[in-house]
Image 1 (cartoon, rainbow, N blue to C red):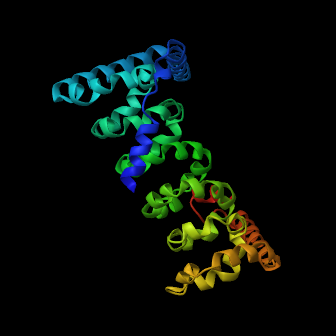
Image 2 (cartoon, rainbow, N blue to C red):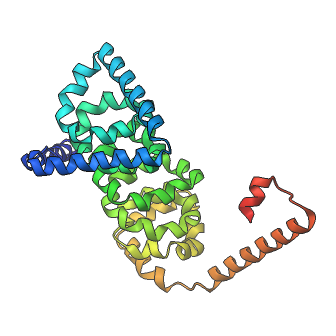
Image 3 (cartoon, helix red, strand yellow):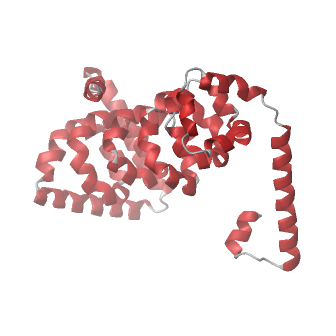
Length: 295
C-alpha cells in the first residue's frame, strides 16, 4: 500500500508540460531571482553576500565533480532545478552543511520536493533547525511535504518549545503520516501543550481514533484535568480502542465543569506572583537568565 501511495505521489508531481511553457518558466525564474535579491539586500552587505555564496558554490561544484556526484546525481536532475538556481544560490552557505546528505537523496525524492522548493527556500530560516530530522526521515517527510508546507505555521510553534519537541521526536514520523487529519487540530491543541505533554506517547497511539473529534482537542485541558489520572494507569489507555469511547469523550468534553480548572489556574497564578514578589525583595534567587524568564 505504501508503494502505491508513493507511486501516486510521484506521478502527481511529475513535471507537467505547462511548467515548461515560456510564461510559466519565466514566472518561476523571476520569483527565484527576486528571492535571491531580497536575501542579498537583507544580508546587509550585498558584495560580501555574493562573495560568500559564490565561493561556497564553486567549492561545492568542484567537490561534486571530483567525487562523481555531479555527473551521477546533479546533472540528470538539472532541468527540474533550473528555475530554482538563483534561490538555491542565495542559500548556498546554509545548504552547504547538509549538501552531502541532500545529494544522496536527490535522485529519489526530487519529484516530490521540487514543487515545494520555492516555499522551502523562502522559509528556510524557519525550517533549517529541522533539516537533519527531515533528511533522516526523508521516506516519511517527502510524500507528506505538501501537508507539512500547508500546516507549517501551525507546526513551528510546537517546535519552538524545544523541550517538548525533543520528547515528541520518537512519535513525529507517525504524526507526519497522519497530518491530513491531525492538521486541523494543531492550532486548537497548542494552548494545551503542557497539559497533554505527559501523555503524548500514549495519545499518539490513538491518533486515528481521536482526530475525527475536534471537540476533544478544543477541550483537552479539561479532559486532562478530570481524566488524566486514568491515563496514568498502565494499559488503561487501551480502553480508547473500544467502540464509541472517543465519541463519548467528544460529547462529554464541552460539557465538563471548568470551575475547578479555573481555580487551579488562579492558584498557580497567585503562587507565581508570590514567588516574583519574594524574588524582588530578597534579590534574584535564580540565575539572571532564568529570573528573566520568570518575569
